[in-house]
Length: 594
Image (cartoon, rainbow, N blue to C red; front, side, top):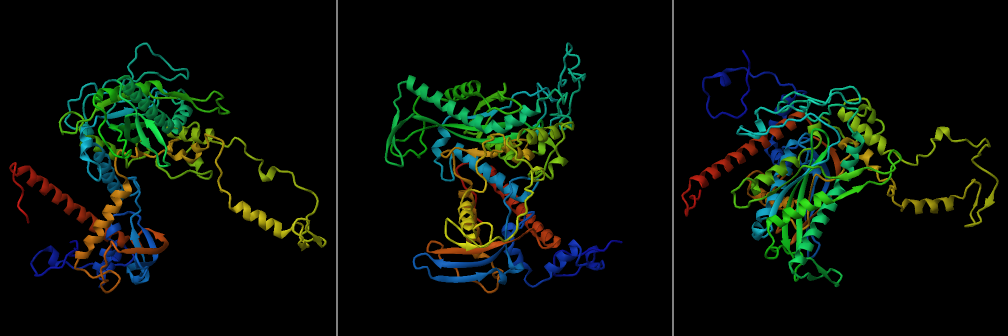
């Protein structure tokens, strides 16, 4: 017979397992025991309210210090609080990591913010005018070129209802009757029909034939390729406007100068995806805007006559035109060619909710990849150093190990100094003190071999210089981003005028939580209730320092994450109920107020 423990207090006793079972002994060193001890404290509900902002975080950040509420006009301190009077003597804040494998809760928040940010650039809202819904927009996918044949799953015709759980019959991987063996004696064909989720997908048919060096270099310079592609598409649109007789627009710059700009411009937003083979693909939203001469930052429709077809032509022309070579490298004096692959997919976006590619579908698709990293390749690690590179890099290992080895080998310093152990030593003894002498530069009398005053002045001058000056080696970043297989760019970027920023969304959420807390019945976590002040006339100044990472005990993490999960379930149920009411409400009427 297993003993059980009531999780909620009962108002009346009733026969049953929960009421009749014996309460097991609680040990404080276990997760359940530490959770029980926390839950039995008088300030438990105050502690839950105190950690609510970071309750679902895997490893929250603890801050300690002082918080001052200051009146903006006079600078008078209205309220003063210290973390010593709060539960755990610290303030908990979420880590904010976007990777779902590191912190699922923060990654979920980042994903929802990314969805709102990307969708607002298509239909408006969040400060973006709703007129953008009429602007031409395209969902573009730019792929990397082939660096060697890999195992793939190709389905020419889907009959499944859900692509995420596709069980359709796939075509043979590499069915070639005229192909024999590769130069290394391995088969150059694969007749297998790979299933979804097969571990061999993305792996080269021959590891020795695959160009791992070219792939990591392409990942490194893919951001520059995307930047040049945007510029080429913008130039194509400007030429198209000039051929149609649309004059350039005069705008006033921040310095007061007047310059003429094209009447149409591109406002993009893109997400980078690392595929199973470790190559970066870019999924982008490209929106066509016009230029307002009175307000250059305003979002206005493009000139009449510009359609989605013009935007598709501009992106297709740019993808086929842009190609360049990387700088010279000791292993490859001519550099590596950087260009897009043959698979460039361009689809118009519908903002009316009808069609194959809608605004919600595109925003959700891109937001999904914003929380992923190298999980598709099977490799997850933090930044690699000289001490840990040997655990992951192997020139004769698997596909991922060879990619990491290529990053570390190509990104090596070009002018490595001679190690101290190999430098010749001066055989003459160097005594700590010498005869008294006078420094000819500053006149200091000393018995040291070098003037201490002049050395201190020179050291002070060196301290003001950058600690890490810019490297002249363009491939040095490969070692820094070896754990990312050479890709060091941001996974989600956007044009300045495409949409709002993540900071705006976060500030809005903070303001909502701050006002939401005023209606709670529980007392303040730090003691007696604090008087509320007008946010428009006061300013909160914090002198907080880093106190640690993570929860104090496993029981605290269990309670906080459970409370956060229950809150998420309540919000999900509320959204589903609201969606059901809106779907069943007749047109022209509104649901009754609660």
